[in-house]
Image (tube, rainbow, N blue to C red):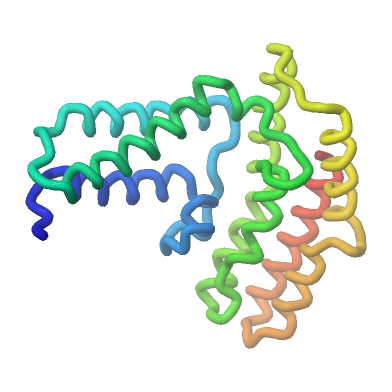
Length: 210
């Protein structure tokens, strides 16, 4: 098998571009280099993400015909991924992405469970994400509000459950408290530990406001 067909180079660019546009997704996938950043969860951010996916979908459609079964499979994988993501935007799923198990409300908190806590660089990324978490939640709130104004809402029980979760994240039993404790136990500079502590306070307050 050779990788001469342009679908393979394009697939590499798709992965790189998607990781850059959706840093939380990149962390979950284990793609390095984006752990210090957040997605733009606002309506404008979602529009930019959708346009990126659509450009890549058009690029796949313009490729020459596959020459063997591996080319065909690569085209199918890229097409299926892009179509699924674009269809989600077309359905406005991003404007009502709120539930008790798997929505942005959980991703913003849980992504820290997947981040590097063994190196100074990893903790620097954690500190950066904690500092900017209020902005990430604010963008998410903008999208939910845009959905509400369009009549795109979820069941009341989901809202109530996420409200409970947010209060927990803001309180003394918050997982963010454990992040701060772990920073104090790690071999880090006092400045970096202080940065993590400040970020923890911001994150808890942001979830309380949310």
